[in-house]
Each structure stands twice: as C-alpha cells, then as structure tokens.
Amino acid sequence: MKKRNSFTSAAFVAFALLASAQSSGQVITLTLTDQNPQNAWGSVHAMEPWVKKVEQATRGRVKIQVYYSQTLSKGPDAYNSVKSGVADICWCFHGYWAEMTPLSDVITLPFLPLSKAEKGSEVLWKLYEKFPAIQREYRDVVPLMLWTSDPYFVITTKKQVKTLEDIKGMKLRVPGGPPTATLKALGAIPVLIPMPDNYMSLDKGTIDGMASPWEPLHGFRIYEVVKYYTMLPMFSVYFSMSMNKQKWDSLPKDIQQAIMSASGLEGSKFWGRNFFDTAEQGVRDLIKKSNKEIVRYDMPAKEVERWRKIAGEPLWNEWVKRMEARGRPEARQILNTTLELLRK
Image (cartoon, rainbow, N blue to C red; front, side, top):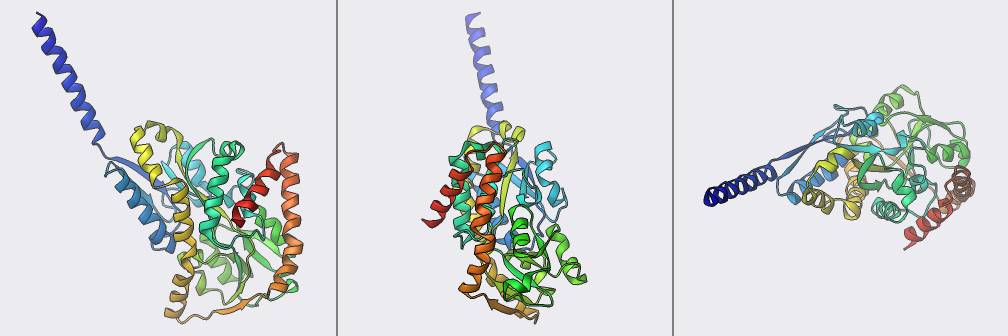
C-alpha cells in the first residue's frame, strides 16, 4: 500500500511539473493600441524595435500585437481602452487628457532648459520614480515607460512667424494641457485637434498652423501642407506606454521582469531618442524626395527671450500656485527637481 501511495504521489508531482512547464511555455499575446501609422518614423524606429526587445527579453514567451492607425481605439480613447481591458497596452499621448496627470505636466511647461527628447524622457521617468504623488497619477494602469518629445517649434501655411507680433491672432493647433496656456500668453488662438485630423485642418485653412516637433510631420505627412518653419524651443509634450493592471498582475513575475528590462528608464530614453530626436532627418529626406518647400527661420536668441519673459517662468509659477491650490503641495519641489535634472 505504501509503495502504491508513493507511486501515486510521484505521478501527481510529475504531472504538476509537466503542466507547469507547458503553461510557462505558452505564448502570451498582448494587444497594443496605437494611433500612429505603421510606416511613421516613430513606429519604425521606436515601436517595432521596442516590441522586438520585449519579445527577445521574454525569450519568445510574449508576443505583442500592435494595432496601428487607431484600428483598436481612437487616440483620445486609448487610456480608457487599456483601463477597461479593451487593449492590454496603450501608446498614450497625455495632451488628450487635461488634468488627468497634472503633476507630470511639469515637463510640458514652456521654455524649460530642455533640448533633446532623450533627456526629457530620462527626467520624466526619474520624477515618476522619486515622487509618490506622481506615481498616484498612474494608479489605474501600470506604466512601462514615460517619454517626452523634443521641443515644439511653429509651422505655418501662409505666413512665417518671426516676431512675437506675428503670432498674435493666429489659429494654431496645440496639443492641450499647459501648452494651451503658452499660446494664449503669446497672443495666439489655441485650437485642440487630434493629431490625425491636422492634415485636413491645415489644408482647408481651418487653422493657420501648429506647434509641432519633427516626428508627426513625417508620420502624418504634415510637411505636404505647410511651408514655413520657425525654429524656437517652446515646450515639450509627454507620452506613456501603459498596461492594464489586471493583465499585468496575471503575468508571471519573470515575464514582468523581462518586460521591464526593455522598458523603465532605459526604455523611456530609447523612445525619446528614437521616436523624436532622430526624426528631423527623416522629414528632410521626405521633403527633398517630394520636391516640397521648406522655408526655415531660426529665431534669434534676443527674440526668443521676449517670448520666454511672457510665457516662460511666469507660467511656471502659475502652475505651482494652481497645483498647490488643488492640494498638491509637492508642486514646487517637483518643478525645482525638474530644473535640476534637466540642467545636469
């Protein structure tokens, strides 16, 4: 009888180990919603390489199925789609959701000492790691990465902006959040339009231009309908790659660790660099290939300083006061830390 019981126990253990091994060998497919076209600069140079990094880090146990061009959810619906489980992961542009992550908005304040998206992305992730108040802003999801754009400049269809007076009264597309206040302070009329709709808005004259970094000019072919490029460092915007909490919690710990090995701080810097910092040359190549015209104006430092005095530090202080009034006493420390990290 004892031998039979021993055999039965051994068989049960062997079966359990086999089942566990089979389970661990199963491929986990994760869905990812993205508003960008598959052939866009950021999709080719950031999304596809990052997906490969994750799949390699998990040794093929994870496959990420990317739904490009809003085919799984519209850009403004991406965050809710991942919260509700419609998608497992979302590429999220936080300018769509004013006041949802207001302390993170510090990185969008105008005329910060930020010149490269890679640096801005590094700083934003470090702020997330340092401040519990910022972590609470993402409590409904699991952030895998946070990254920023390079600084926005001004592009227009019919008139080049060279001075502060030129921008007054112009209808310019703005991404939302603090950048809206920036354009108002400068005397422009901010217009909120989802990025995929800007081509037609520019072409029809609904707007006079937009504030933009280089990357969307490539992905959404904006270079086809604008002519004038005014180079000055206005503000940056930020993004997240976030996962549904329940889906994340269902993943084995080693899978979670493997995903984060391709994400976190280094992943954030990778996205900032590859999605944004490298995009200018891609746009220039397209402009040359299509025989489009680019009339570039590099704004002199003296004129930039005029803009900064009106829409720079005064708006930093307004942001701090607004956050403190809403019960976020960490705002000043977060701003000071941001400036310190950007200047390193």
